Image (cartoon, rainbow, N blue to C red; front, side, top):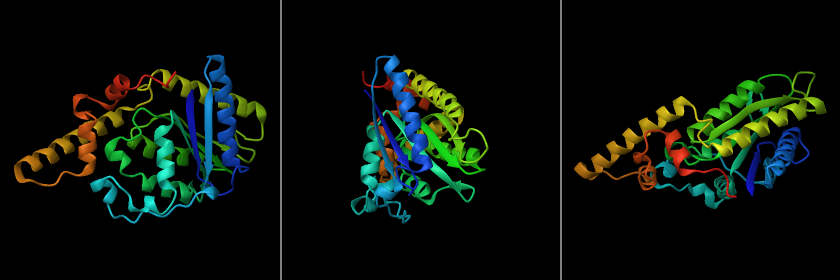
Length: 256
């Protein structure tokens, strides 16, 4: 069973274009997985169905590993589903040359994931919809955020609602596109470290140095250890040279 969770950062609901892109991709992925004797469990949440508060920059998540707002809105549920998934679809429409406010809010509330590589071992696809332009730029912006969190982003791209390509209303174009996305997602599941980029490995190395410094300061001067350092230490990140090595040796694809 391959677990797919899609967060559609649009309040247009399940009948919106962005949700449609997610559903089309999930349907094709299900067909391709079936050819391999696997099944897909797909869940999609749209922005109109959840309550979400803006990050208040209290830094509690970095220092204590807990966001106080998780008790007051639906972000805890979103995090739980993200961490339980084998594949994550992070979807957004283009609003004023960038991601939606909802998408940015979700990413901001997950900022501490970047210091803990919380999405390491997860395969992700960034699915963006746009009327005319800035689809590529928006997809790349979201991709970068997920990569900071440790995700293996197998695909990041967009569809158009106008005459531009790929057009979500032209079945032939969408069939080719969803084939490509499915191929990349399944390849990532088979080889979890395949789509991790060099700069992600470099970020992992830098984080290890920061963690070692924090542990040393605790030992020498009794300085409190932030929760993010404790988590990284407990997970044994220090034993691995790079994020690629950690993911490749720790994750063996989806549960079969």
